[in-house]
Image (cartoon, rainbow, N blue to C red; front, side):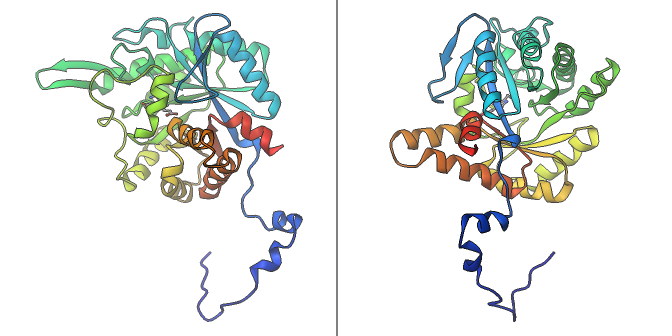
Length: 333
Ligand code: PBG
């Protein structure tokens, strides 16, 4: 639909439609509800462990028992889904903890699916938290520095995704940004009998400074270099569309844009171009900025959080991944 105002303006008085809350709701173009929210959670071995993440007030590294409590309380508030990250006890050069049958994510998935069968459990599929160097793929040290080995990494990612599905994960979400990983993971899931496990790909994932606080939370900061050889350049929008097209072609069921608020233009273009189920990941830095300003009394946390989430919906997001999911669900009641 194209709107042409020329010659017909002014054609009505919008303020007539703003006279009452009921009327405003009737003509509202965008709905925000708890049903769209996904809460990321960080699992770590132990019991009764709640280790606060400094730069993210209200976010903790949780032992499985505590994570279950946190998930149950969010679910009770109306949050339908969680996204799991794991922090292993030991890291190595081949990310063994990522695909261990009894790894921290696999254990936590089994516990959640047993105790809260209605809760949708999504797992982040990546190697960075499990690698001693903190990169998302295997690394080869050469004369000209370190190089990420794309293709050999695919097999490890596929093993990780299969181990999550075997533990009972409802959706797997690869966040590594290696080329060809969606095809590799889809193929492995299908071969192992997980034909019905959907794949949500971090399709347009930018090399963003907004991930800073997450790397403390997940203990996944790279020891050398950065992620710019595999994550996207924030300057590029057309490239984001190509990345999404490739992931869809390779078998992604849901595509994601990340970060969210500074990339609403990308979100809107992707939703308009592909019409696929689209997720927005409002990342750690977005959360921390709101928390910090609110703690200073500079902004209204609740209003700013809900307005940000509404903006992501307006731009085209179906799914909202946010560390504020539990609070937002309570505020939306
Ligand atoms: C792992 C991963 C990252 C995030 C989600 N999965 C960090 C990164 O790519 O460095 C960031 C999430 C956030 O900042 O909230 N690859």
